[in-house]
Length: 299
Image 1 (tube, helix red, strand yellow):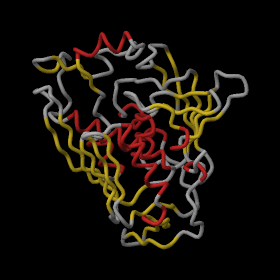
Image 2 (tube, rainbow, N blue to C red; image 1 turned 60 degrees about the horizontal axis):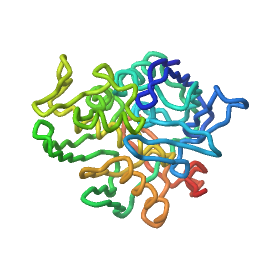
Image 3 (cartoon, rainbow, N blue to C red; image 1 turned 120 degrees about the vertical axis):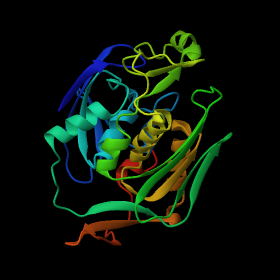
Image 4 (spheres, helix red, strand yellow; image 1 turned 90 degrees about the vertical axis):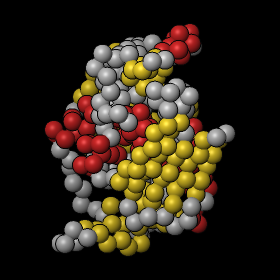
């Protein structure tokens, strides 16, 4: 499964090829354009920047703007994948996760014959920066509650509760595009950012509303995209979560802080295996391996 397109921030053409990977290896990026094709694991320890996007790096090798692709993988129920990249940034495509999820749906998933492990939240874990915050609370499933609040009156305050399932993700979240404000465009380009941005891969908001001729894909597309980003960011824990995430004006930076708090407070979660019964009920039992995957260990 391969995707080719323009990178949002550096404006160059780039491509990714996604293949199945071994159990419990998580997501691993491979820079096929560099001699030796060095790998960068998708993990909290390898986060290098969270300004307007989540960027990963290891030993001087970088992969930028990974959150939409990771969101599509996690949202579609993919636990392990090898991602070959030509370039240092993931193509933005239409600004959402929908092209990736359609590709995943088309080729299908490879079922691996081992129990699925998940991280179950037992006590609240939170992080904040300024007036932005994020918290994980106990639950026997995964859901996201998000509130955004912008000075721009067209965007304003939006709130959404999302109960996760792969079908709900594809239907309700994957289509939501990244967005930005016209007043910020010149500043971003001066900083070498958003050089590949256009109305074909982002929702552009002016003082009086959306400038894109086609308008919005849903009235609350903005908050849906923030949920999309959050699902991509949280996948960097290297293991699916059983818990409820609540975010207020949170972004990549606050999500990074939250994941670090998870790693620093092992007494507030445990690892469980999940098994589906004939009646479609879920049974949870303790994982034999009580350590987090290596992808989330501190450097």
